[in-house]
Amino acid sequence: MASETRRTHYQVTFAVLAASVSAYALLQSLVTPVLPTIQASLHTSQNTVTWVLTAYLLSASIFTPIMGRIGDMVGKKPVFVATLVALAAGSLLAALATNVGVMIVARAIQGIGGGVLPLAFSIVREEFPREKMSGAVGAIASLVAVGGGLGIVLAGPIVNALDYHWLFWLPMILTIATAVATVLFVPASRNRTPGRISWAPALLLSAWLVALLVALSQASVWGWGSGKVIGLIVAAVVLAVAWVETERRSATPLIDMKMMSRPAVWTNNTVALLFGVGMYAVFAFLPEFVQTPKSTGYGFGSTITQSGLILLPMSVAMFLVGLGANTLAARIGGKTVVLLGSLISAVSMALLAFAHGATWELCIATAVMGVGFGLAFAAMSSLIVSAVPAEQTGVASGMNANIRTIGGSVGAALMASVVTSGPAADGLPREAGYTHGFAMLGVALLVGALAALLIPVTHRGTRVAGSADENEPAHAPLAAVPGGTVMSDTSE
Image: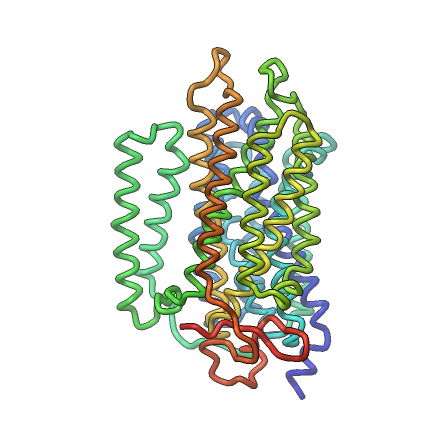
């Protein structure tokens, strides 16, 4: 009875979680279209200003699984509040930054906010009624990508009406409000996983991610064949192997490798990696494509605001489809929804590659992309959360989001290399560079569809693998099917 009383106001909890995730998602992309403005204002170079993005990406990659693990140990609510405080503090520092060094540090602090996503999934699983979990998880997962798209759309109007500092002031205000709302309205966690953080795995995780992402982010500057890039990639591989072995031997691993090896987990993570390749590359290069001068013969000469609006159909479609994705998954299976989303997303990349001569063609392509991404992201998140015990929800969903971020780094770096290869006489990319780049992203998503075929088939009427008590709501399956039965992954 007590647990049911706590769930009476789960709608309020969802609103708080959604607002928090939206603030984090906006900060992922708000600065992307205005890096030249920040570069000029802070009197720095183009190479240095890219670290405003890289520092955020590196920090989020490191802290997302760590904050998820700490939340599982000490309680989701206090750690969720702590991530929001870090996000607000980083936003404040970024808004006040007078040089690029301070801006980079501020963005690294903001990256700690990456923990909001795995913690939000954990809170949903713990506090929501069984029949509401799937829709809530899907909606929150969709908000991450939707927020990323809207950040690019909103950046231009905010800068034009105010200035770029408000790209940080506004998220800070929203984050503070959601932190206060979390304290007031989100119930405290009931479930905890006793233990401690093993710092050796945490340091190794940080080290190989830093080495990999620095190599990928700088490859277009240093050259893919340079000693620096090759050395960092080799170091990343060695450190990653050491991290895996350390995790395997650790009594309290940061990432449970047995959990990560479950078919439902590693297959969804593979799909997430490839979707990250596509999504972040589009966020970075589609606005650049449409901002290219008309004199090139293919560019639109668009403003920051106009280029952002090209992605609005994607954000709208992704959100709307994400809301209903889990209802569809309940009917045809989560695996089928992920596969369908992968194929639709690949079609959208083909449209961008071969039909980009008019604005309406780009809008159709991004709308199709939103449908594909919305289906896949929502279903993947539910499949991940359903596949692990409740006490591992935070770290499992955190790694899924983290792997998507790593995929984004790979996609952006590869796209930069393809687009900028063989520039025109004026130094601008050739149209063929974008055509080949978007086609490459389409191939990546087709490989994602092949990976989706390996996702275990779900079964009706079974409880979640790893559940200790099938009557415990926190372990309940996420997808209800007609007739009161449930769908969950039972493979190990």
